[in-house]
Length: 198
Image (cartoon, rainbow, N blue to C red; front, top):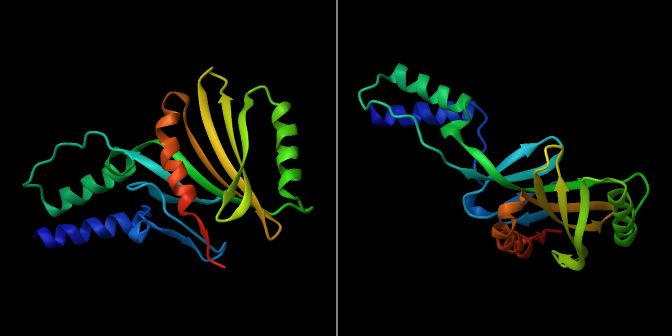
């Protein structure tokens, strides 16, 4: 009976499209030729506007349930919890990897200058720090930004970007301003793990 429930649960999760953590902790992109290790426990999610988004789960209290529930009740509960976001998972921070292929080629400095110019025209977006960095050995820029939302709340964003083979690769950490510093060492570890595979 217990084995059947595990099989049913796995089928429900896989069938529901839940993201699975990368095996061994590393995430590899054959299409973009890199590998990176996200923070332990973070979940890789696909996104149409990104290569991948790593999200930090914040588990909340699970529903109480009877150990005597039938298989039908068990499946109903699993699907219900999935509908609420499997185990009521919410997210506090995320790390997003994107690639941009501009129609006109940019050097790293040209891209940095253009994005600085755009940022200066937006009241909600303020660059706090910018410095030279590397990403998998490629010359990069590391930038920290404060974003003030319409409701007055603030989000911090730290992005490291480089230009490689005519494309702009960006890895960005986003977190609430109050807890941003907590995530910076995790972001540094992720950046250190980043390697180009070809």
